[in-house]
Length: 163
Image 1 (cartoon, rainbow, N blue to C red):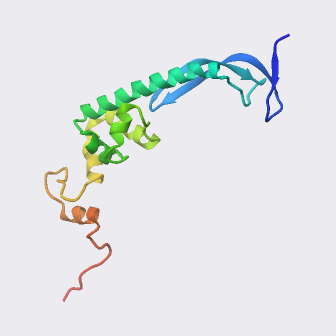
Image 2 (cartoon, rainbow, N blue to C red):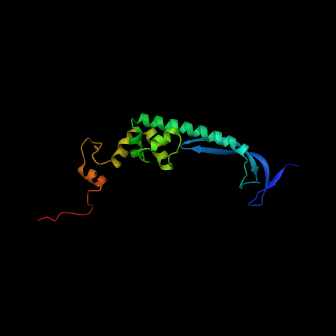
Image 3 (cartoon, one colour):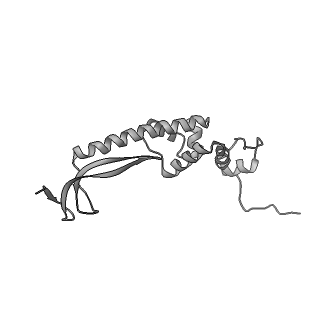
């Protein structure tokens, strides 16, 4: 007879088993064999520290791989870390954190990174949306209205009265 445990919260009978679990970081994923105490069918499992070792190692490896991927995409786009943070999102220091593996990008940032990896020409489109005061529009011409809007100096919906 196999060894069993009772789940402390659900009261379900758990048996020692190994099941597949998918670890995801950014756009990368890896399926691992995860040992643990599992109920029949679906339900909450219990994992020991030794059980979690496999998932922790897979997560760490994927985090390092995705950090390198983010850096390669940014370099392919010829953006500095600061520019990438402003254009893709997350702020000036975001890409420093993404590329070191300290912080994973948000789902929205992952989506933009992956779109730009496949369509680098679209960086101009994002740059136009993120136009900052004093920056040059993608056409090469300055856009006074966009510059005023971005800086908060423009008044929206106000027209001058004609004489």
